[in-house]
Image 1 (cartoon, rainbow, N blue to C red):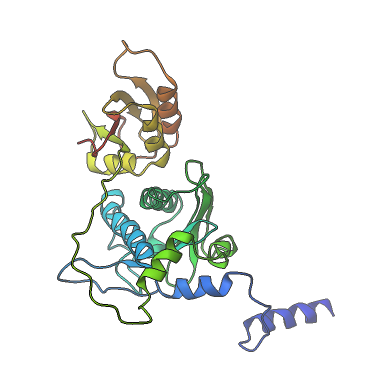
Image 2: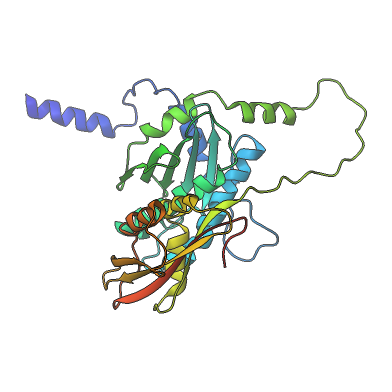
Length: 324
């Protein structure tokens, strides 16, 4: 009897007509948003910039496009083997959707050839997407830490999800087909006030009004932001390691301990397996500070390409423009 019941449940789950329970709050809205990133611009020659962002309002589209363009750039720098194990993909570009609600901000990202990212590589990609999402929301004003969510999907399902507060370590899930329930609240909550006002501005007026004289757009000055960069004395693949440094959210956060225009240099010894073996200050004349301890703690989670043991020099600074 038990075996027959199990067989019935299995057959029912595979049958198209099996009844499904009521959707959870935000589930339908999440599915609708996720469907909008299943396909995108095709590869090959194009003219102008591809718009890789999706959303309801213009600010959401711009944030999503910023994240997708960042991942597109980092993908070629951080990872290799793009043509190996080629499989069918609905899009050849990173396509992102942004949802800004009263719960926080969520980014859904369709990753081309997602199956080629496995284990630590998938974890690195998710952390790079998280850092890009933090940077894309740095202009949002909130009373407390901003709640953030990032979901990476392939053709059929989501395989990497990160949820947490900006400035803290997110909760990360990796797998082949993950439950997407943690993302639903961001789509169940009402749209944020910023997006509400923008949607109102975008709505056509009820009555025609005389055209207003043209006004030159005011471009807001971008506030100073922390930057951590790597200056390498020796390394077999400096570009790859430099990209890993830039994408490391914890390291970027450590730069906040420095004053405007200042910088600190450190030496790191990288083992053959890509992990940091030793971390030290490059100038012993300085006293060890909380900022140094922050960078040292962050260095324990860095992962570089495998190779022979080598030494790198990392500069952590705080400037209005990226350090070069």
